[in-house]
Length: 113
Image (cartoon, rainbow, N blue to C red):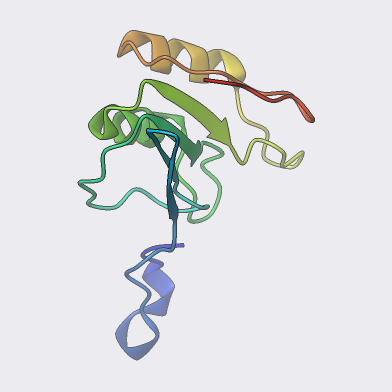
């Protein structure tokens, strides 16, 4: 999950595990549920969290993180927490302000590129 302030010292976590898949000439980067951290990965398709709860990126951070990857398609994830719902209007506004191409998938929906 990246840096968690209460776990300072020997318990500190300063890394996160994500996945980069190279499939049929496309690079897909799945960040996992994480906070924003220094990153120089580039990809075509990016799946990243947007819930902003705990140690998970929020809409604001995820938009700029996505822009830095150069992704031609962004798939927001971690939007399923009913206690901490994502404001889709805020997400759409923020992503469109910085010209991100995105798709909000409904449960069971797929996308082909």
